[in-house]
Image (cartoon, rainbow, N blue to C red; front, top):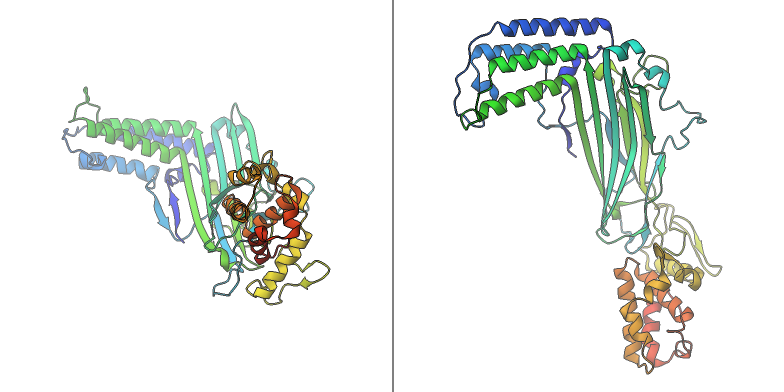
Amino acid sequence: MTFTVGNDRKGGLGKFANAESPTAERKAYCSAVLLAALLAGCSTVPSARPNHGTPLRAELPASRVSALEQIGRETPAQPSRPTTYEIVRYIGVDTSGWKTTHVPQDYSDLYTRIELTSTRDTAGATSRERPLRNYRAENRDWVARLLSNRTDNVTTLANVNVREPGLAVAIPLFSLSHASGLKLGNSWNTQFTASYAESPLFRIGPNTALTVHLSARVTSDFKSQGASLAVSAITTAVKIAAPTAPLLTTLSKPEVNNAANAIDTAISSLLSHDISEDIDVGRLGDSWSAGSQIMLYGCAPFVRAGPQPQQPDGGGVCASEPDFHNDQDMLVGQWTLTLSCPRLSAFDVRDICSPLSNGKEQIAPSADREAIDLSNPANRAAAFRIVADAASDAQILGFGLASQINVATYVQSQPWFTSFAGKTDRHAQDYHDFCYGSVVGLESAGLSRFDSMLVLRAMIHQLPQIAGSVWTAKTDNVADCIDLMQKAGVAL
């Protein structure tokens, strides 16, 4: 796995880490004034040279570069270019229960869905757990708001992508924000996903793979009177070091652009930080087991969970050293992402992790797999027979495929159905084309081979355009259709 952290502008913020106090404000003010006075004493003006694409540092004499480096020492700024790290700070991923060695297990053509639960599944005002946020502890009093405006935000998102059949699910895990200022007061917003069960069932293919992309965005914006003076000093320093030409030409364009970039970088580093963290983890579908799970973790720097001074969380999930504004990172939540135990049919809620029975035969999960061993042909055939016997034809035809579209309305709109229904003199080839055409069409729509056979059976039993004595008599005309269904464990 590669973890990428980009656009980290945290360097200049450290000077104002405690800027909520008047003392810090006065220090910032004095530093800015001294810097402006120092820079005003520099008088050498660089010559303009058409050196396109050269950084501002290369265009300035040593005295001017030294002056800008002095600003960097007063308000240290980190490079904003993306940097690759082996560790991220605010998010984490852990996997367990996935098979690392090949074990014969045939889940192809079964169904599963994405499920997500949180350790805060009972979160809320009545929960026994520690509240996620303590607004009184996070509150900034009127003195702090008088001196500075501050806006913090943390958003974490889990994007789940499934290869075969090509399913994408986006789950916002949490979004926390706190804005405060002289005219704004204190404003909080909290969004937290305690559980997620909106993923549709999808058919497992021979090459199905699951990829989870966990991303976090941490932003902070800080504005104060002291910061405004420092910004003024930076702007003045750059103007002295690289005066604006009276006309924009190919000769002056590099210096103008470099000066603008220098001001933008310095101010952005001074006033705010913007951090993006991303983690990708993937697993193959055939490595699933009953205990397979992917754990997701999310931390935040400015959240307060109680009136006491913040301490590193006991689980050791979040970073232990102080973060921006001397905040301690707090664990916001832990989530478990899993694939539900596979089901043989979308029309039956039973899965292979529980015993299956139809009164005549029964099959149970094996102790070592915690699921029915479908790699055994006898077990697989028995499991499909049990589910087929319990499936109701009326229920199958009424099953919803999309908004206001059920199985019955869908099949009656398909060419293979209308073509067969319109024929009065039907021959063996017509029945063959109808049965095989319906199975291929339904599989293309996303149903499994087994469910396609169940729909075919339901059409024969329930739809008057298809039903007839020829089916019950099992004549030679329908022999191919009956054989096709029996091979899938569906009896007419």
